[in-house]
Image 1 (cartoon, rainbow, N blue to C red):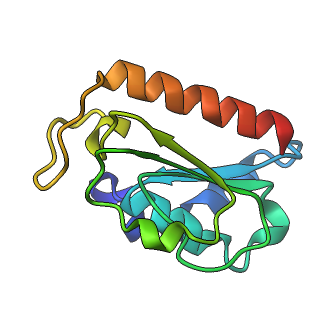
Image 2 (image 1 turned 60 degrees about the vertical axis):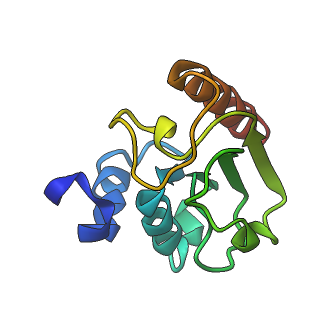
Length: 134
């Protein structure tokens, strides 16, 4: 993926999907802009997917597939008004935007009061619970 940014290859998931035809359950997810691109991919591919997982991101269009949005209470990058229609949400107390990744401090982000490991552990547990019930 060029520059490791999903925006340059929104349909890259097709390659993975086609490589593993025996798999019957598919979930797509992403963080920030990657989440927006994952959400964009869902439109027109709903029949392939069982769910969408967004970290510090919001869905860019309406979709009938189950969606989980996870964000930090200190994430000032995320427009929470865009989460109004999402029923599966988790706010991680003390988490911020950048700590879903491993790229350091992000300019304009809020200051986290929990560790990156703690934030990612809470996110992983929520994702596992979502996958189990979807």
